[in-house]
Amino acid sequence: QVQLVESGGGSVQSGGSLRLSCTASGLIISNHCMGWIRQAPEKEQKGVASIDSRGVTTVEDSVNGRFAISQDNAKNTLYLQMNSLKPEDTATYYCAAAPREFCAVMGWETFTHVPLDARGQGTLVTVSS
Image 1 (spheres, rainbow, N blue to C red):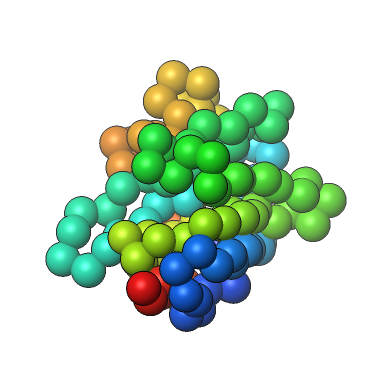
Image 2 (image 1 turned 90 degrees about the horizontal axis):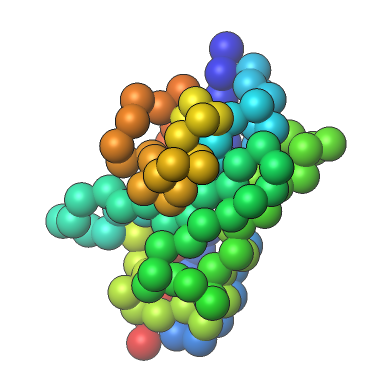
């Protein structure tokens, strides 16, 4: 059974930091295009960041320079380090896995444009001003 389980969400003030984790079971993350999606209240889901099997990353423009995606293959865990958080970053954040070939072509846009191999249940991030 494939599972992606996110953790690390919470409430933080503007300018603060959080690190999200996503632990995978039943799936080897290094064999997939991995990434994060977020969905703000009453808005559509949007890709945030991607990382491929070689460790090449992409990030969406609005988080560039503030968010960083990484993975620990030994722990089969994906991370999203979020710094300088803003109120507009408030959203539920989902970990996602997609077929590995899409990362190079679509980067962070992969996860809202192709069928996913797996997606987690989400973790809520709330940033107050």
